[in-house]
Image (tube, rainbow, N blue to C red):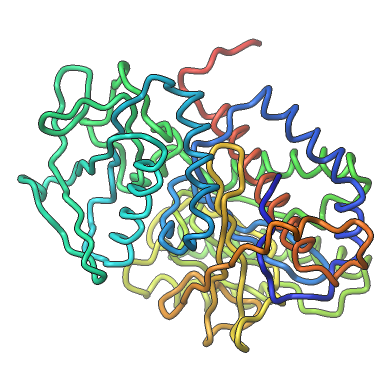
Amino acid sequence: MVPHLVTALTGPINELEQRVLDSMPAIERWFRLEWMEHTPPFYCSVDVRNAGFKLAPVDTDLFPRGWNNLTPAMLPLAVQAAMAAIEKICPEARNLLIVPENNVRSTFYLSNLAQLRRIFHMAGLNVRLGSISPDVKKTTTLRLPDGETLTLEPVIRNKGRLGVKDFDPCTILLNNDLVAGVPGILEDINEQYLLPPLHASWSTRRRSTHFKTYEEVSKRFGKLIGVDPWLINPMFDSCGGIDLGTTDGLDALTARVDALLAKVKKKYKEYGIKEKAFVVVKADNRGSGAGLMTVRDAKDVAALAKKARNTAGSPFQGEQELILQEGVLTLERMNDAVAEPVVYMMDRYVVGGFYRIHAERGIDEDLNAPGSSFVPLAFNESTHLPQPGVRPGASAPNRFYMYGVVGRLAMLAASYELEVTDPQAERYD
């Protein structure tokens, strides 16, 4: 059963929520059957936006950080999910090597590594941290603000195996999305389990591929419970090989934005929605927080693109692959700050989550930006299971059950995505 987290929100999405709750047995059976056919990503997190009239994922991270935001009450579920995942992959596993990002100076990220180490240690594994950064040439001890320490060791490649000194792991867990490309030291590892696989990294991965598979999943799910899939799916478009520094590039993007805005406005009109439609333009081959443009009118594309290109570290410089995504408002609030729930999963289980909040951002803006903070979502008492007879919008457990369903739909889409992009997959034409 999906854990039900405390959410402060009550109110909209009543009809969709009612349909989801009424369909719970069918939904859980459907997921069970899907996981018999498809392998879930080892772990992932999903950013969910609740616009009141629709509830949709806007980002799926296959190398999730932020595990330190899970409360101690969530840890038993995370440990249980880790046990299930490891048992399926390598039942005899004794040693696990976590490969972190190359830059580990952030105390927030170090706390994330400490939490991951804690989860897998409690799942019964010896855990070490092995860095592939060329700057880590010797064993380094790092101290966290709470006094806890982490030992970071340089990774050693011995023929076809990866490890650290005096430590030969069965499984290697990447907590590094390899946005700069796959280093040679990680290639051709055939004797150990590398999780997630290399084709889940941004050297291969495209957001557009993910949302294409999510679109397929949402259509099938919509048919299952009898709802318009648009209510759980953000429309999108993609364009590759586009240079926003050229007139042709700007014209092409403007035309695509205009067409997508028209489709969104048509849906708004169909549902009597008075809010202003908007489109978010992101790099197709980057992780979250890698820059984006929010476009409310196609006429603004040129000015927004110029501003975006002039921003330090912008992904919009030179020829780019871009994804255009229907913007989804968030009506969630925490202490008067705009908020969005982030759902954390391991194997096929929802294990927890938190609110990402940003006091200086609006309901139609990206919250994954400097100045954001995180509020853990605490578990309800175990007696607070979904309440099918309760009026929609009146039950916090029911509301978060929906978030867990949407998170798992995005995770299922990610499993389809990894099958499609797997270079080792068998092809049947």
